[in-house]
Length: 476
Image (tube, rainbow, N blue to C red; front, top):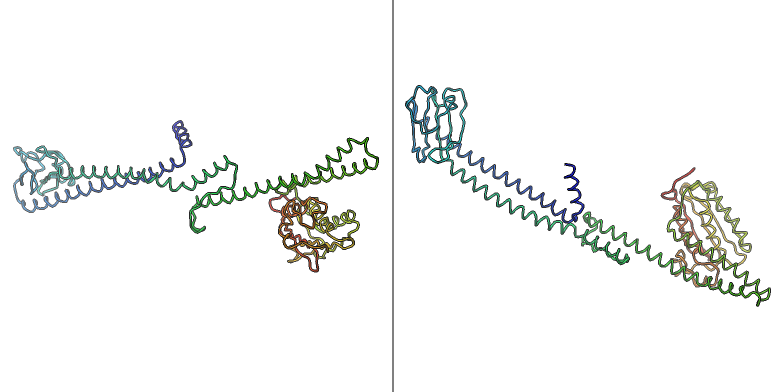
């Protein structure tokens, strides 16, 4: 039995889903059709026999009424031809009472028992004169039994005709079930077939721009398969966006690396001919080579972090945002000695704690402060403020400079990788700092926004909600 089950399971795995669905639907409809036909056959057979039994009962009642007081044996009707009225005979309980009686209908022990009142009336099927009969044996009174018989061949013929007709109907139902099962599987699995075809096409071409065509209709009334196809289209859109982002990252990285690598090669070639250079020239080339190496190293490190797509948060800890910001401002003062940094923390925000990685949050703030200092004229301050609102549930950290600000046409792109406004083309940097800052902010459940500051300059706002970063483990 287990071998049969394993064989059946193997067969189901090898059959296409459309074939299995068609067979299942056909089998279900075929079983219903066969069951209905079988039930109809038994109902028709029962009704025909019931009508024949009613006729026998009526005939017996009529014979009893017409033959009260007759002798021990009475035969009525043309029994040989069994035409109406029915063939009838009266049988006594004691066989000695009619030793010479020649009965046309069979007389058995149960008939004598009915005559003696020891047995209830009953119906039976007998055969006489080459014809099938339906016979009723019932008490006649005074120790006698009445036997009444009618031809049963019309009923049997009707039952056979009903069987043939219902068998034909059942066969047609099974055939129709097969056609309907195939149509249902073909129609019902059409979105799945399109989904499979699209997935195979994407696997073959590695092009995620393909989409599955969805049937028209309101989104709220779509079936499960259509919703699956819509979800697959959404996934393809995300995949296409991810692939496009990666391709842009590679293209932009190759473009950004080309210039410093060329400078590195030039300086390396100059140093290789050091015997032809003066000490001052060698010193300048060596310094340029060192700066180029640091620039390329920083750019490559930034690219590696940005290429992860998600900020790694292996272990979170409770971080006092004010302490991290104050420490980052102190470091910025050493890096940008010509730029004053003003730090202010509200009383309600000074002790605010959020789960996060201190080093990553410090990197976020460092990128914002470096960006502000780079665009600030010498001697103009960079203002950093931390405040709490909403009963202390939300924190807001702002970084404001007094530089030229961000043009309105550049504002939607300031967090894109490698994006640099026209005014920043000549300034140092790779255009990755703000992109990395937003990535770190979102990984910590915060949101980073850029805008114009009142009175001129740029204003960056980092907002922490009441909840921490999603999906991280928390260590108190």
